Length: 548
Image (cartoon, rainbow, N blue to C red):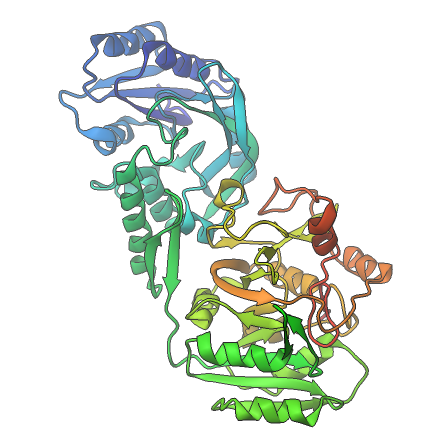
C-alpha cells in the first residue's frame, strides 16, 4: 500500500470524548484524502477515551491507534506518533482542536508550488465551547526573529517527516513548549519555510488550556526560554534569553562584539525647542544620551551640520567629551538623504547608525540591542521602539502595502502588548523609519544609500524596500527604546509627487507581509502614521527613500 502524503499526529490524553470525536471528524472531512491519522493515547485514565479512538480506527482504515502502556507526557506521546508516521509530511493537531475542511488541500497546494518547503504554517483562530470563533491571528510571513520572541507559527504546522526525524523529533524536558523547540530546530535546517495565509486551524478554548489562559502552563514558559537560548547557542548568537512581560514571550538581550566599530551619523542644523517644559538643543541632548546609554565604547559620532548651525552648538558638542567626534559641514539646500550619505562617507565604522537629532535614548545598553542582530548575515537593518514625548508609541516598524505606508501602532500606550504581543517581541518588519536605524556599511553601500531624489520624505521607505529586495531581513527591536520629539525641528510638508515616486518604483503587496491584520486608523494615529512623517533633523519628519 503506498504511503500517504500527510501523517496527522495527535497525542491524546483525557479529552472530553465529544470534543475528541469532533477533532477526528474534522480530519475525516478533509477535501484532500491522501492522509493517515495517528492517534497516540498517553494512558488516559478514562477507558472511554481509548474506546473512542479504537471505534474511529474501526470505521476508517486510515486511522491508527497507538496505545501507550503508561503515561509519558506529550513529548513521549508525540514521538511515538512520529515513529509511526509513514507520510511524507507530518501534520500536528491537538486532541481537542479542529482543522478546516480544506486545510490539507491548501497545504498540499502550497507544497506543490514550493517543492523545497520543509516547514509550513497557517493562520489560526480560537473556538469556544459554544462553537464561536474569534481572535483570528493573521500571521506574518516567515519571521525567524519573531519565532525567538514567541511561538507564533503554532497551528497549523506541517513538517517534512524526514527532517523531523533528522533533528531528533521532540526533545525530552521541553514539555509544554516542545512544538516551539521543534520549530526552532527544524527551521534552522529547512530549505524553505512557507506561510499559508489562510485560517486552517481552530484552537479550542477549554478550562486549563493555553488557548484560553497563557498562564495555565507556567512550566511551558520556562521550557520555551530554554529552547530559544538553545538556538542562540547552536547558531553562535551572542545573547541571553529572558522571559518577556507576558507568558509565552521572550526577550533576547544581545551582546555586541567590542571590536565592532559603530559610526553614528546625526544630521542637524542645531535647532532647539521645548521638551517636557524645558528648552534644549536637540543634537546636543541626542549625543549626550548616546554617550550615557549607548553602552559601546568603540564608537565614532559624525554630526553633519548646516553651515548656519550656531557656533555655540558646535562648541557644546565638543564639550561633551566624546572620544571620537567628527563635525562635517553641509552647505547645500536641505536634502536629508544627501546629508546622511555624506555622513556615512565621512565615517569609518563597520556598522552605521542613522540617528535623528531629535532623539533621546531611553534604554541602557542601547547600541548592543540595536546593532546586535546585524551579526546575523541575513539581517539587513534594525530599528528601535520610538516614543512620543508623552510616552505613547511613535514607531514600531512600518506597514507597507497598496493602501498606505504607515507607522505600526502609532499612538498606542507604551505598556500595551499589542495584538498577539506584537509590541513585546523583536520581530521582522517591512520597513523602518530612519529616525533611528542600524545597518552594516556594506549593506548601505550595496543598495546605494539614500535616494537623493527624495530630499525630505519617504527616503527611508525606499531604503527599506531596497534592503528587502536584497533578500535581507529588517528587525524591529522592542527592547531598544528612545524618545523621538517628532516635528520639533521642522514643520513637515509632504508632497504627492514623493508618494507617487515610491509607489511607481515599488510594487507593494495588497497586505503587509509582517502585520497583515493592521489597517490604517483615524485621528492622531493616522495623522502621524499615514503621513509617515518622522522628523529627521533640521527638516525632517516624514518617511524617506532612495534610489541606486
